[in-house]
Structures are given as C-alpha cells and as structure tokens.
Amino acid sequence: MALKVELKPGEKLLIGNCVVTNSDQRTRLFIDGNAPILREKDILTSETADTPAKRLYLAIQLMYIDDSSDEARASYLALSKEFVTAVPSSARFVDQINNEILTGSLYKALKAAQRLIEYEQDLLNHVSARRSGVPADGEGR
Image 1: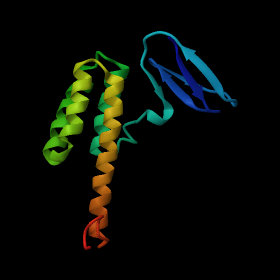
Image 2 (image 1 turned 90 degrees about the vertical axis):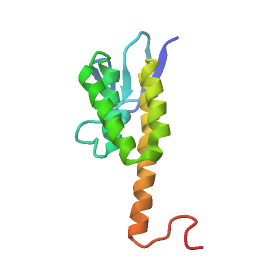
Image 3 (image 1 turned 180 degrees about the vertical axis):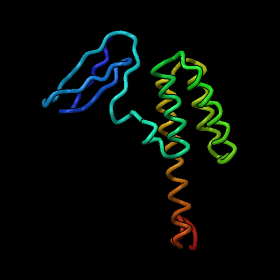
Image 4 (image 1 turned 45 degrees about the vertical axis):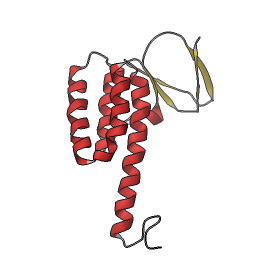
C-alpha cells in the first residue's frame, strides 16, 4: 500500500537523499517503495538542534536518512548517555527510543524522540517558572 502525502504550497519533503519542493498548489503524492521520508516540519538541522533532546533527535534523523551512518549511531549513544545522566527521569523516553532503534524502526524512534523534546520543554518551562517566582502547578496551595 502506497503512502499518501499531502503537501501545502511551497512545502518540502525529504525522500531518501532528495528534497522535493511543492509548487504553489496543494499536492497529493502517493509514494510506493522503501525510502526514508520526512516532512519539512519534522526535519532538524545542526542550527535548529539547539537543545540536548533536539541533538538526540538530529542523530536519529541522520541514522534514519543514512542507515549505515556509524558516526550518527556513535553520536546518538554518547548523547543519550549524557542526557539520562543529566536528567534521570528521561530514562523511560530514551529506553523507548533505544527499543525502536534496536528493532530497526527508526521512524518510530524519531516519533519517540519528539516526545522526549516535549518532555525536555516541559522541564525547562517548569524551571523557568520557578526562577521567575511563579509557582508551578500544585505548588503554594
């Protein structure tokens, strides 16, 4: 069964090592085959990977695009160990990512990494709120 992808005007799509840019009209593509596919909104660059969780996502993204990338795998392993050491409560997210990688489900690993990015953002928001003197949910009641 083919994957159906609808692109907005001007939206980009990565298919394998190729970038497809949509024209000025909404387009529907049916993609048959086995190649890494990422929408523009799901692609990170080294410039946009500005937090530890996003750098983990970027390493997984590079593994997804080029499954033979030993450099991306090594980077992921080092980053994931550092992340869990710094934020032990993130271990459940990293364990899920690891399981997806071990089973060869790199796209699912990317989705799990997106949940780690959300968790990281929640932690950063919590710290920021505490520094500004705003009580976090449930505190000061």
